[in-house]
Length: 69
Image 1 (tube, rainbow, N blue to C red):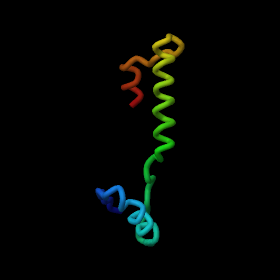
Image 2 (cartoon, helix red, strand yellow):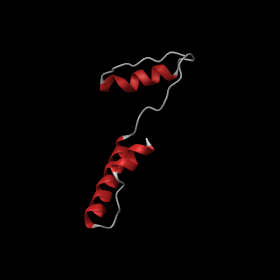
Image 3 (cartoon, rainbow, N blue to C red):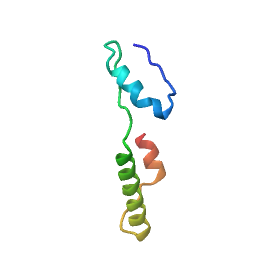
């Protein structure tokens, strides 16, 4: 299977996705996070940062974080 990356104008994306979904030869992967998911993720991140600064949340040392990757 081959992979193709396309840059599509934002206003044309819904039309393009609908067109591609109707083609039997193509498999679509995740279309990305919605605005609501992005907003929720950012809010959770800022909440965790606040807890860390207040001393209510322990961080992970960089070395440990990189070893997990």
